[in-house]
Amino acid sequence: MKKWVMANWKMHGDLNMVRHYIQMLNKAPINEQVQVVIFPPAIYLPEFMHRAQGQDYAWGIQNIYSKDKGAFTGELSAGMAKEFGAQYVLIGHSERRHIMQEDESLIANKFYLAKEYGMIPVVCIGETLEEYKNKETRNVLKRQIESLKINDAFSLEKSIIAYEPVWAIGTGLTPEPEEINQAYLDIREILSNIDKEYQDLPLLYGGSVNSKNIEAINNIREGQGVLIGGASLKVEQLLEITQCIVCC
Ligand code: PGA
Image (cartoon, protein in one colour):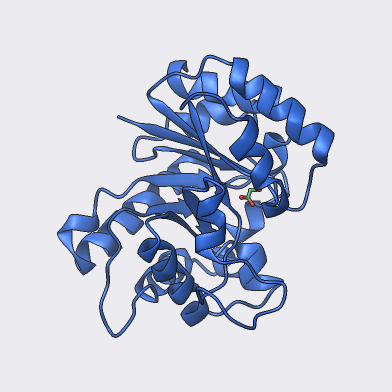
């Protein structure tokens, strides 16, 4: 089964770091069962396009706007990202939901625009700490998945879902492996209730993944990989995690 290792740099990095990172990726043997995807800040996408060698890894954009062009100062479109080779796009990351106040209809619009451009949306969903404590995880996941529709219709094929509990992001805290597996099972059931065709969408986990906890996370049965923030900033650590995804 194919697995994913995704690196979300958020607003980190500089030109030196980007070039070193790409150089290391170009040299690293990446097992063909793993798809590595890097999400650098968008301004560095041209570096990937011009310096990446081979087909062993892909890259994506951390955010797009919900329209394909127009008077939207400061925004970037899916088409622009594609011109620089971005094949994936993060949609609904908790930092965009909570800090940038993105609502579910904006997120749905971005999701479908990404698909229109043939990009693979990686939809991030997950509960806050309060919702976790109130045992509302399943309801939150259901609401967030069911909001991904346009004109009352779903078209979720060729997307990836990342379960990212908000309270686990950047905190060093992670749910127990059984809790992650339960969230995966819930997500599969929610997807399958929408359409059986969606029940096998790839499911990733994100939130304080690092080279120490990757083995336990990788052994969770229903999961197909990870979305890593902080620990992905060092290419050595990303490669260590990628190695573990195949063999541990
Ligand atoms: P983290 O971030 O690994 O630093 O917790 C994960 C994410 O936000 O995707």
